[in-house]
Length: 266
Image 1: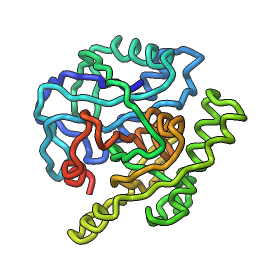
Image 2 (image 1 turned 90 degrees about the horizontal axis):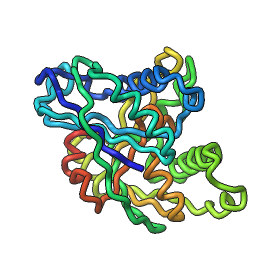
Image 3 (image 1 turned 180 degrees about the horizontal axis):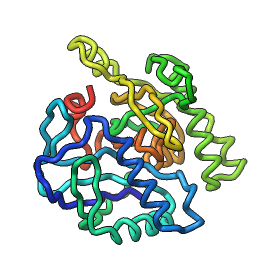
Image 4 (image 1 turned 60 degrees about the vertical axis):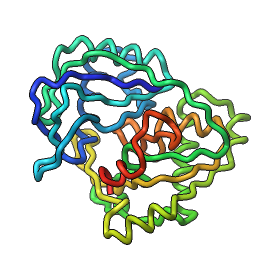
């Protein structure tokens, strides 16, 4: 289930850092803990995008000038979604960066039809490697065209599917097909213009700051439809519950064009 949470913005011109997933993750965690439901205090099977709205870029980050700001939020657990929204809407105002946001309404995205071949766009960066204290391995660059890139994403996807408890052991054995093929034209265009599709991003876990490398580019994923649906709802790669790895389908009306994503993330 994917929804768009619509907030009214009380102070137009306010800003968040250009890469603000860690602020959103702290807010989401705070809301989950505030609800005090023991079933969901350690729940991690959800994903969310960055904030969307009419923005301008400055040295401080992204300044929002639209009257409304949206956040895409996704999970396959309706119980958790209902719980999260009830806690969120108990708050008349929340602060993210310098933005004063008031939750206004929820819009449900239309279900999508997936096959064993889907072209995806990244609407938040994909992280391949887990982060460890005093360890730089999470920032290592790995070519999207390498087998290692696909293998790491396969391993993290299978791990998340197993921990979700939604699939039997027999079902899991059918999920061996998994190959990510990047859009070579996009990568070549980015490199020709000296822009970047891979950056270092901050994240926090147990109040400790880590840095990880995230990737944003279009790609085609070859995998069983069940796996495609799972990554569409749960995100792809590490730290999906911290706002990384959110995807959208390239032919889905709700997504931006690739040129827009290139402007935002490259």
